[in-house]
Image (cartoon, rainbow, N blue to C red; front, side, top):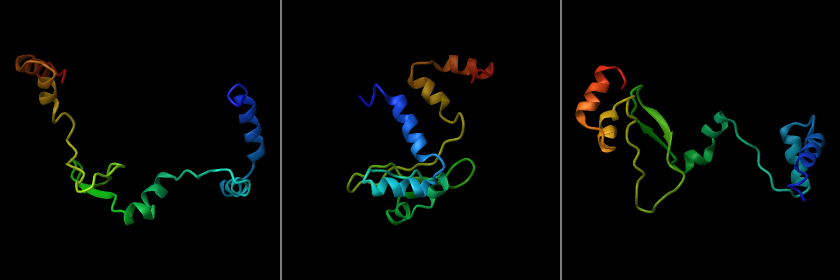
Length: 116
């Protein structure tokens, strides 16, 4: 039923919350015991204390210098996530083309023509 009348439901929800701040919406949803969560901005995500307390940030090298990166969202006990440096543009082109079966002569020709 909800799916068939989704447009009506979206309209009703929009009208119910129109003009309210995010905090007011959350307050109403909490009062009605409706599960909800506020979406963080990028800056709020970066500054989230749980990421720091759980050691989720790593510094990796890049062509532009060191940058902070988030570790993958999963953990394997006793295994450190590989967080190698970020390659420069085109750094692995020849290796990838070779891996998919392109011969060295074709790669050289494409390079001389500016294709790669």
